[in-house]
Amino acid sequence: MGKQTKTVPAAKAVTFIAFGVLVAISAMFLLGLIEVVTIFGKESYGIKEVVDQVEIITKDISGYFKELGETIKWMAKSMDKGAGLADLCMNVLALIFPLVSILFFLIIALKLLFCWTPLAQAHSIGWSRACIRMCKKLKGVAGCAIAYIVYCLTTSAGMDLSTMGEVTLYLVAGYVVARVLLDSLGHDSIVRTVFRTVSTAAIAVFLVIVLKYLLNTEMPLWYMIFGYTENVIVSTQGETKNNDEMFTFILFLCSWLTVSFSIGRVTAAMKKQVTMNNGGVKASLVWLLIWTVAAAALQYIATKKYLGELSFGDWKDLEEAKYFVKSAIYGAVGLGLAIVTGILCAIGKKKESDEEDED
Image (cartoon, rainbow, N blue to C red; front, side):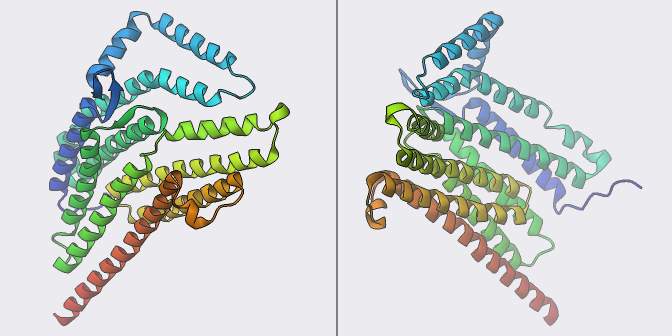
């Protein structure tokens, strides 16, 4: 017996919309989702810059990687018992950035090259199966684009989200809303359709906003993590050994690690929304709230321990603390949106049932 495929409402329309969004995201990715600071100001880092890097590397591949290895080895030797760890790690990330970018661009180019195959197979496999395959391809491209944005903004200084990057994030949100709308039309009542669409739109837009906010730290996220790791190591050595200071730095380190977990939950929720995995979205939002509240709590405890005495009111007015407080608020808002819009959807479903009973 052949494998059965569920019937997808408006499969043909969804397939073409997913195809269009996939091509649009890929094109914007190649044009540049990230801006880098140059002597001429901020410029998009796109396919032109990647091709230039490929030309530089391919002129002398063995020489390029030999020099890269020697540079990293020299920087590692320059460290003094853990001091300089943050600079070492960030310099390594800066050195390998072109290589990682080439890999991401190659993946997107290959995905774009073969994105048409579900359309070509539609007449033989059916539009529902073609739709499912196209949506999987879109999820892969969207996930790759989001992963690249997160990689760049958490590991490199002097980078920012470009206009193309912002449009890409909102395009993913727009697709999610259109997908739910098309899924509802034809078999749901108007009330149910409206509530489902509003619910999806609210969470989709929220996820874009919170991702942009969590990535908007004064320093790259991993610089903060490496920096506090360095402080932990240094505080355990020689005349500067200080167990209380070490514990404080561990708290700071854990607070920034939990921010990275929060970012992971946001990106997971965005990718689950693309595949209409509502249960997965809500689970990710619950974890987002847990990690953001944990990050704020750890930051408060660490700052209080570092300064000796600090009230919560004074702490939340500190510039760095505002980031953690707002992160926790965003986490609560996200979960609240999921709960409230879920209730609205339940109301819509009840009204739909009541209308059917009256008929």
